[in-house]
Length: 188
Image 1 (cartoon, one colour):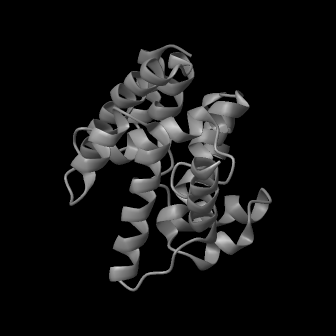
Image 2 (image 1 turned 180 degrees about the vertical axis):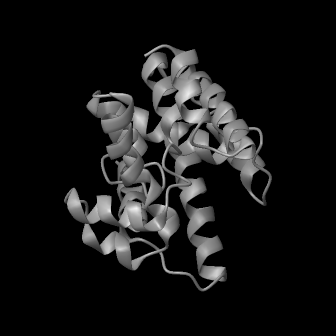
Image 3 (image 1 turned 120 degrees about the vertical axis):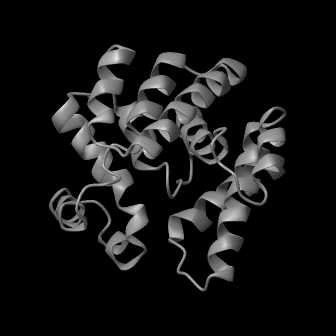
């Protein structure tokens, strides 16, 4: 699918603010793919569609998670996580994207997963560091991303975990598993 067609489909699903975020994620993902030898076209496509389901009704996302065999424990955690797996499903069904690697990068862009592919890492990190993001710690992660993708990803996950801990919010187990997996690989 061409960029303009993809952006048109996504724009219909998002607020103006979220669309601007998506454009930032797209540019950041392409830059990270160039830097780290990833597939730029897949990075572009996954970035464009990463928040496709962000504003779908919670009931619709819950129904998709339940009906499509996604891990049911997702429903016990913050609904902010739901748009990623629901989005992967909807992008396949509504936009006709069938590339498994692209769909998986969309599916895991909020929680991460052990054994993340290069594309998974690029989309997760691009979503975190795109130029429109402004919060404590993001600049450090942006700088780290220029040197080492995995170290930047670890720092982004650490920041996310600490943020959620400070707010007394639950943390989805896959986020911990992702962190542990990346740390173990760094030590090897």
